Length: 115
Length: 113
Image (cartoon, rainbow over all chains, first blue to last red; front, side, top):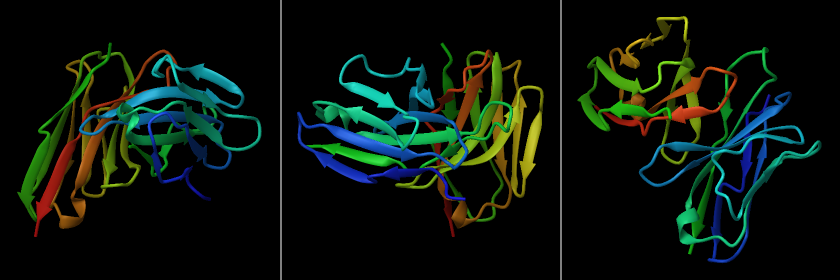
């Protein structure tokens, strides 16, 4: 049973380009979360999605950032017109449907560098 | 707004020593608390999860305690080994159905051979 798979693991983008980060949850998990870890900072919640629905996006910056979790395929975190301050590690996590168990599994992260 | 603080930020100990990592949170209305391990350049591995109704959890050489009323948790590592070197993160989940985790900044542990 594969864990949470994130790709790319490392991504370099020039200022103004777009970054797309993909996350495939653990098989059978319907809840996906994205967290951001800035240098020397703790992980900060960004968004919580279930299939085709955004449940909580209270941690998402108001502009340039969007996330989706389509019926088929991985969850995507999209950052438009990247700036240097977007350089960070982006972690995806998944958990099973509510009531099954309450363990959350994290991927190994996608490291975004904006130059 | 929930805030999680971890002390110390970094800790260096000789191999074999027992050690305690501390975590405090400002809002005691939590659903659960988890301790994670993060290796450099890697993701997070869940070590122990304590439900709000529980006082402690144990796994091997690790023991985590929770005092919800005072907003504190400790992670005790017995007989530390160099392989324990990593950053240890504490995170809480709020009551009320929110499933998002609020993390501390972590304690970076180095166990010297």
